[in-house]
Image 1: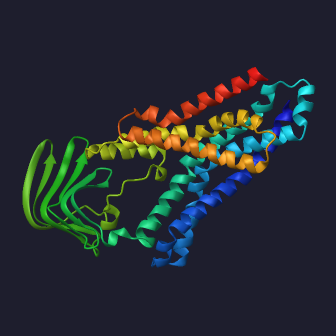
Image 2: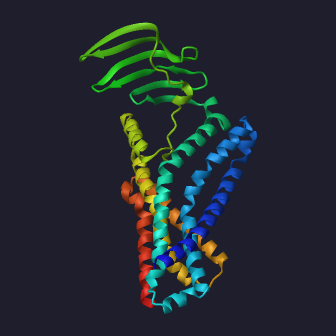
Length: 359
């Protein structure tokens, strides 16, 4: 049985790696051509653009792993049937389930690998790619202006302003707060704040400083005050962090920070559950591919390729719909994230049982 398992694993992983490379390339090229006009007009150096494109590769590779898993399942089983090995193995006493157990094992290995990559390689590469895009290739900060904005300066720093100009490095009516274990430790409430490049800190003008010590608040007016707030304007841009830029551990901390600002964390909750659910797509889609492959066993590899492509997109479409329903509040975050997996796992189980019954 061990020899057969290794044999089926070889049949699975060869088309899996080929499919992963092919699907990644196709979607990567589509995304690149979609951004081509911006890339050509960008003032960024060729080296920056090359870095950006290369750092996008892990993102697209992880996104298409389910497609590669399904294609590998279809190719492994249909090839096994078409070669006549299916009948020979049955004649040797193999049961039907013995043919797909090794494939499910391979899919579980892919699931674990996908989760590890999603939590290690993806956040680092994708975050770096986004910084290159936002700061050098398509620098929106050059014209960004914000009104009545709340910003996160650091783990314990928050600032509010009626007006914030990134390029000018200035704020009108800023209120900067330093949070401690017992609440607000210090606060600067001013009419104006400007970023000082030489000192690397924000200077506040015409305001009041409030400091809380041992439960007592002391207030003092000032005309000009260099602050301990040292976050540059470009780093203050209120960008919503993409869940792909952070791991589950980082997402938990980020959720606490935005909750402090009174911002709904529902979308982050949905994304966190989706991060756990997405890798299991590979195992489920392999289970779905087994009965499909056995019904398409007499068809060509081209048909299998397009079947993998179509089924994978249907699966991903259900995942997006589920997450949208969760973000809108129509479904609880766990249900929204796992909806596609539950539906397709049920379908896979039904088709496998039906095939066994008919067989």
